[in-house]
Amino acid sequence: MTGDLTRILTDDLKLPADRLTDDASLDDAGFDSLAVVELSVLLADRWGIDISDSDIKDAATLGQLDLLITTKRSGR
Image (cartoon, rainbow, N blue to C red; front, side, top):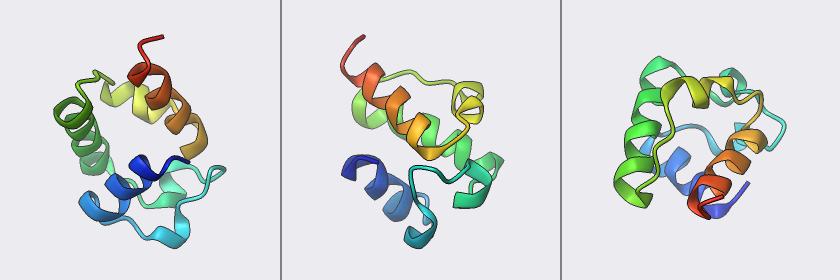
């Protein structure tokens, strides 16, 4: 997982760093419905990328979520 995403998850969403691994599910990482919405808003505000709540929820792991974000940021 990229450092940028890790910082958002730990600093802004206050998720426990020890649970943030590439193969962790969103539930295992400590996401709840509010965290999903907050992440969507943070990504739009900070990086200008639009990732819907459902796209975030559809990511099976944090690694897949990171790949989705990286792809959107690079404009692919």
